[in-house]
Image 1 (cartoon, rainbow, N blue to C red):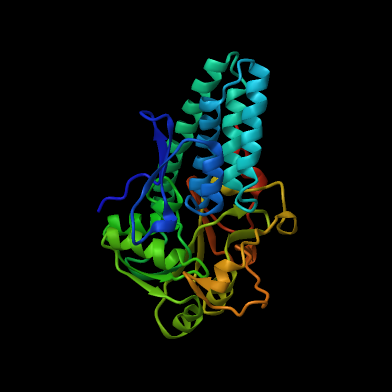
Image 2: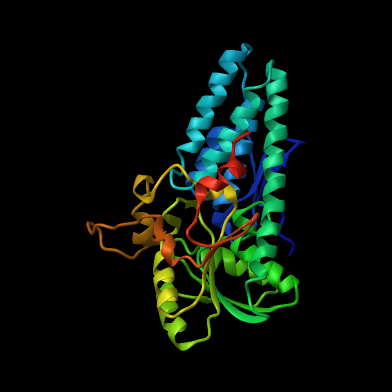
Length: 347
């Protein structure tokens, strides 16, 4: 089965199309999203997820807001679209790509001198964000593939694949590019509690491509680093500050274990994920619902009345990162993010 674009624009229906990731691997469902409010709900529910995909969702969200706005006055039109942009940006506070995509298209339509022109500019800019994402992921893949041995086993966490981008992926893009180059790559995919993005999504993606993948529980990773041959850890990122990498909860644990066992720990992420303006302590870690941990389907797994902690992300200090793989090349600590600011300037 060929995986279509994770998210894109449907010109026929003037709306956003996306794969509902909450239905995988059992059902492959493509949703037509016609309102910004529905898109915000989809992002909160993780129907659309993954930092680069959220950036594209934010961009198309502004295009959708512009396309559906009924205001006849340009100032009122801009105010309404800005309000929708604020709504979208607030849905996932830790992942910086979402607000980046929103702001990039908002800035583009500000230059338009009419509502019709603003609608056209917004859609054109959003489509460009999506096109750049695909190109970016392939570039990350090429740079990252060069770091992997000809025969290797790679540990990954959560899902940083085609489903987390428009296509190809960041961390899984590295693996796909390495396989495309003829390298023999085996993947250990951590299940990634509590929502099992590794077991449900990463394993599904790689199996569709015929890439050797084995699912392990998160708690097995350290044991396998100690007793098996794991040649590298490759993960994605939701935000990279000057002092830390924010990614799905559990990433920090893998980084600590990789350092102890002298295994390279690579982060694959576009420059749009870099945040040179903030430090770790200034970034809000999203706390998700109790039910994600306390229930499994219809079954209760935590007694009623018992408290649950459910942070969606953790921060890995940059000292534990061997290198960050970007579309511009491989960066090694110390990470000088301010020198990269020009690459992610909102046009």
